[in-house]
Image (cartoon, rainbow, N blue to C red; front, side, top):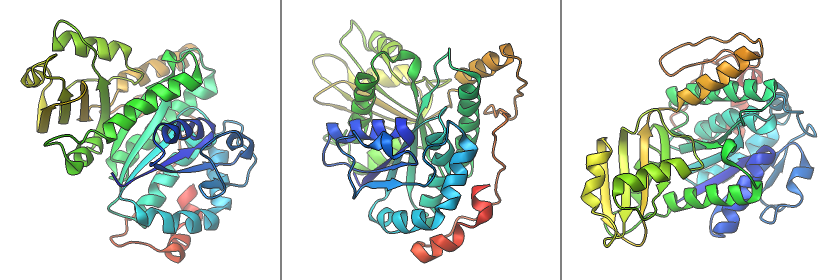
Length: 343
C-alpha cells in the first residue's frame, strides 16, 4: 500500500510514532509548531520532521492557521515533492487541540492541490466528556471543517478515536494504531490492494473491527463494537465491506446477513477475524452530546444540515475552492497558498 502518514500536533505526532513503531516500513511526516513535543519520539528525525514557526498554539485553532500561513512557502516546498511519491494519505491529529486540529484541514487541501487524485483519510481523537469548554468547541469546529471537506471531495474517509476509553495514552495509541495497521494490511487470497483502497477510502466514515471468539458471529461483532477504541457510526449500513475470518470459528457468509452492504463486499477465510467497513454514516450522535455539554455550560449552538453541522466560536469561513486537475509543483503550490487560503 502506497501510504504516507502525517502526524499533526502533539497527539498526532504520538499516534504516528506508535504507527511507525509497529511497522517500520511505513513512511511518515511529523508536523508541529512545538518542537519539544517531537523531541522524545523514536521515529521522528530531521528527515521526516517539519517544524512550523509559532512555538505552540495554546490549543487555539485560529493561531494554528496563522502559523501555517506565516510558513506557507516552507510547507509548500516540503510537501510539494514528497506527496508526489504516494497515492494514499493518513492524517492523524486530535480534534480538540490547537495545532493539529487547526492544521489538519489545511494540510488535506494542500495535498489535494498538489495531487488531485490523492486518497485522504483523517484520523481524529474525540474529546473526553469532562473536557473544558474550549476543547469541546475545538472538537465541534474540527468536525464541521472535516465534514465540509468530505462534502467538497477533499477528504475521503474519516475515523474518530474515542478518548473516553483511554487509560494509558501510550498503550491506547498502540492499540488504535495496531487496528488501523491491520486495516491497511488485509491483503489475503482474493482481497487485493485495490479492494483495500476502495474500502479504506470509501467516502464517509470507516470502522475496522477486531473480532474475538464467541458463540456466534453476531455476538462477536457486538462485543467488538463495545470494546472498540473508535466511535461507532450512526448506522452499520456501509457502502464497502472486507472481512477475514478463521474458517474453524465463523461462517464467512453469515456476515452479509448481519451487516447491510450497498456496493462492494469481499469476505475470505484467513489468519484472523477482522472486519473493515467503509462508507458508513458519520457518528453525528456523539457530536450531539458535545453540543449538549456546551449547552449545559451556557453556550449556544445550533444544528445545520442533515449531517449535523455545528456553529462554534472558532468556526472557519468556507473558502471558494478550485481543485486543480493536474499535479502542482512546489512553485505552483506556493502561488496557490495565498492569504485567503488560510482564512
